[in-house]
Length: 296
Image 1 (cartoon, rainbow, N blue to C red):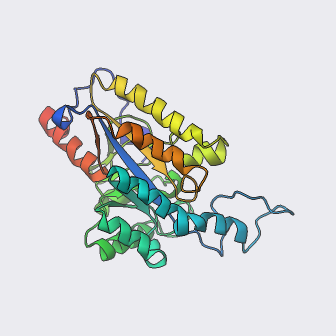
Image 2 (image 1 turned 90 degrees about the horizontal axis):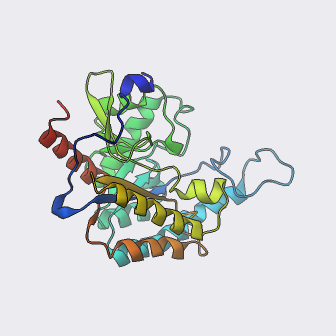
């Protein structure tokens, strides 16, 4: 099913007003991507080009660059979450529960949400059996946490034409791959039911800023604040959702972390925004659909 078959065009102006509880104007959610990179495969991303070019195997420098995030960077970022009492969402490869159990335990202890993120960090279009990968990821999360994941983020936001159908049929409530709105939207599936898409971000994302656009670390703070200011202005008419996306091997390194912290030094002082998980945003929007008669 192609995009225009899944959802209709809907301009944000003229929609029914969405209302958050207690006078809040925006919901902010913070997604931490924790991944496992297979040392026997080409690295999903690289920081260092090999002297002779090509894709060496094993690629020790680029694998180690990423591994630093799980060994050190995550724990550095975790202190920021604890300092400001911000709930996190762990977008996690299913294999990470065996490879990085301490990270999963730390998230569990803080009541973070576990978001399915593929079984291992690999383009979903290149996975041999997509349904099996989705189900294995879901099973790994349930085995560790005791409950099925409700949300999904494709590795690199990759999907096939069938991904939303497979997710809905596998019991997922929402997906984040369709970065096309500042409010949740519904995607039709082949079963006749729908799956919700919750706003994620490509540009307020450390991969885009640091690895592709090659900005200095401060850009992460500046762009997040500019993004927030505009969304806050927009939210005078109807509630908006803002995503902040980080990877431990990028924003968790020493020269960048302070700019991540500064975001919450500013936002935590606000009384008219809520820091929520994806499932909280899902349940709020579903209740608004009921109140407004939007979704049958």
